[in-house]
Image (cartoon, rainbow, N blue to C red; front, side, top):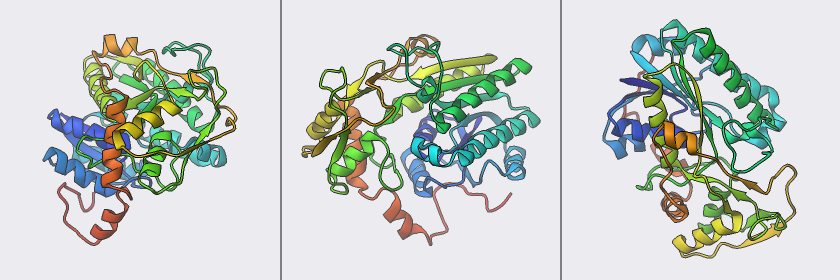
Length: 356
């Protein structure tokens, strides 16, 4: 069975490719590498000892995408590709709406043209906005508060309309909470460009000496230690959630929406303490004012995914931190250094079509 992975060279995409290949699926990857590295794909091949096909391509390239579908008997699509920084989306709303929505529409149109009606869509817990109650269930009120979140919410609504238009469509919408961690090999992991926006890569870069300290925004929330609480999920657990969702939609139609989280939260200071324990390094931090829009507590109700997908997150906070540290300590500059060293090498361990 051939699965097309859009954005497969990215953080979550590369880990999902590993799980798909290990499960025996044929994998075809489309990624424009705008916020990822081809080195991650070399390492996916190294980890799995499997081959797959990669196209460096933007989803806005309709003709190119049609060429991929013409070449491969695609059975289903897992759609990760898109812009994903909340802060940047506020500064560049038109880019986010154009890239995230237009490219997704093109993908769905090409899927329809080639008779492919099975889709797993990468959404986000940002669609809930400021939650009215905790834990957050799939039926909770929706209200994204930034352009990135609105692109996800708009696409969810579009996909529901699409599924209602033709019963052949089977779609899983996965709302992620906070992915962290890395593959246990330490060969693939989160590789943010510039200063990280998320807590875990920031902590790990402080631990490895790239950044001076962690800035903790707010210490007066109504939580155990006054710092914000979030639902952190190991990226491998998240990847396995995509496999379960894929298996589900192959045998049914309509739209299903699932939260992918652990169902519990950890505070910022708990995350720092856990990372210090596994890394055996001190993580300096400084308390500063709350950021506008931040909430005190956010974690998922995962009962629906547990029951309907037969899936649950099994990796705890120390394993998440340990795997993050193994990745960061082994790759202090991410893929950057190796990418430079290998930039002139033509041969890779996976198949790259020269042209369509």
